[in-house]
Length: 398
Ligand code: PHB
Image (cartoon, rainbow, N blue to C red):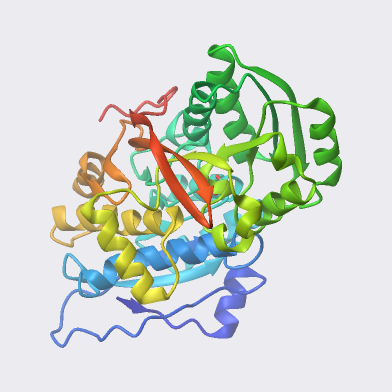
């Protein structure tokens, strides 16, 4: 893999507040060959989701490195831009990568609102876009497209699996508390759908604006509502702060804290004992007993001196999907239809378990119930197998 060195001026021109060019020194192949595939990578390298963006980047780079630095014989040039998790900046940044840098593929991002802005531009230009995290439902429902692929999850998909698991654990009443934007709303929507369908009662929905971390008034309200459990979508720095505040307010002593696994992934060490007992459901668990997961965790830790988490796995699988598409066309990305068809049909053994895409290009995958104990997300059981998000409104046939 090669990285186009971006000058500081070019970086600033791309991102306003600066972009990240985290380079890996892969040697250039000695033989003359086709020029590199240009990949525009838009991820958060600043703000509350920084750690998520970095983990995704590392997962992608690890996969490419394991292939010897090329995919289907083509060197990969990453052009990285910090999207700052700021939706208003997304269309301009995506336009600069697509029209300015003329990238072959656009990869991004973490934040649902930013992903919506990117997808609009990618759709207009017909550029292939791979989503390594953002779960906004519409992108694999009514706004699905033949050139748009998601390797992560749909926001409702995770919430729905969590609502079922909470019911099965005997939770009867819940208060939801989340950031007010698509990811929080849809995550809570999925949770409420399955939780209520099974007889659960949602006492109140509480929100704070993204990326606000002032949780005190919500915590006081939760204490007075006395639900069996709280269901919360927060992630990254915000999640770490929330878990610590929840424990400091002593709510963890009598109200179970539940959430999609984003609440605890990557923040296990930061929250320490404050996180003990937090129950989450996710399409990944650290101790999944399969060879792909064991190999990934060893390689990730060796390369980066930090444990892999769901974001690293999603990055790894994003690069893997790209690899499968490129291999099917012998590295000739100009064969767009065949490239897209191959990715749509791809399936493999991911560290998360079996992976394949639905007809709207969203993963069909297992979900796992985990409990945070002693700084580890311990796998309790498989909560759902081969769970597919509805493809409502998607007109793709494949
Ligand atoms: C999203 O905005 O879709 C999102 C962000 C962070 C997560 C999960 C989903 O951990």
